[in-house]
Amino acid sequence: MSTSEHEHDERSAGDDLELDCSAVLTDVWLILDGECDESTRARLQHHMDHCSPCIEAYGLEEKLKHLLSSKCGGDRAPESLRERLTLEIRRSVTITETRIEPES
Image (tube, one colour):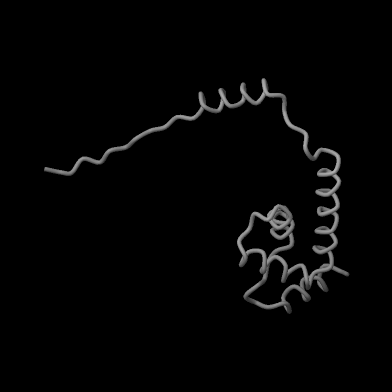
């Protein structure tokens, strides 16, 4: 499919749901990880239903996620590394408190 044909198909999918393919592909992992809200998922899915390059890319990402899960699933970092990271995160987080005094 040429770029102009792809753009035509994308526009015909509905003006209210026009999404740029690069934005859809950036957010594919949100769908795969179940981290997007229902309206975002529906918009992305609607775009992919009408855009074969995006659905193909989604399929590749889905296969990659499955492969990573099967090869790396269940691996945990050593406890000593987890403790060091936790300590470093606590050291780097600065909590500030701002008080607004009422004017007299």
